[in-house]
Length: 356
Image (cartoon, rainbow, N blue to C red):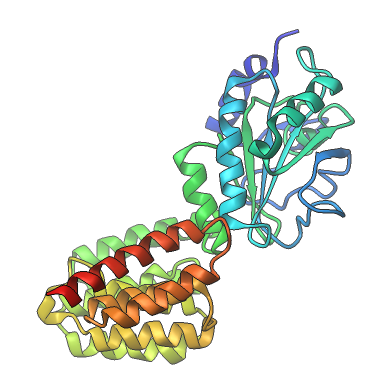
């Protein structure tokens, strides 16, 4: 019997090229964008747990990885999956790694392997007691090419399938965790987005705004970059700074439900190199980042860091240092180091300024 990484590699490569759909037992397997099957983890026995009571897959996005002890790619993915679990924390992501006994790994082999890994393999690890029932719920076979991962959004829909260390996996996961990705919405908006780009290039502004409104109607949160693009259209394409900044300020009320977008727009205004200095309004940038914190959480590390960066660009370095320090101290364990590095950079800049 061939190992699964070889036996099914070609088969699932073909399935992926044909649109990531397959069939088994007369039923169509799920496609990306579909709801995850009910009970796809029912036959799993967890041999590595992060906390008591089983994984809370209904509360966070899920990475579901299939792996094997003898597969080199699976072994290389372990530290990256551990890093992802630590980076996002248990409140933002659940990483599940599932395998089952086949030729080359018995139950005992799997348990010994996981035990030897210790904290290096610091995510949920389970054995499928029914020989691959979890994968059967997603594919037509009892075995999948390994390592292979699904990203399942917080709403329970499949958003990605593929290699767990690929660039695409990382890109989609970041957006899913932020609640900024939905495969079906992107497919629905694909043609609109192409036409939006074309209308902008042709300076057909009536058409541009109509089409971009159509995209926002699909999902304002997922396509939040439309708001930032519209700002650029008014500021630079149409050379109308007054309207650009008035529209940006209006969003503070109109999109108070999306504080991250307000913060990102403020950061864009303050730091984007495409904006000429004479058109850069740092007062509005600060208004946006302050509003983001007011509506999204005064102690939310990401929003604090966005405002700190705008303060830095305004030359209010001491205030930026203090706020970035608070962001660093408040950040989750997995993200603390990144915030700390920025805090240290700001502090070094403050010291240089004070020495001058």
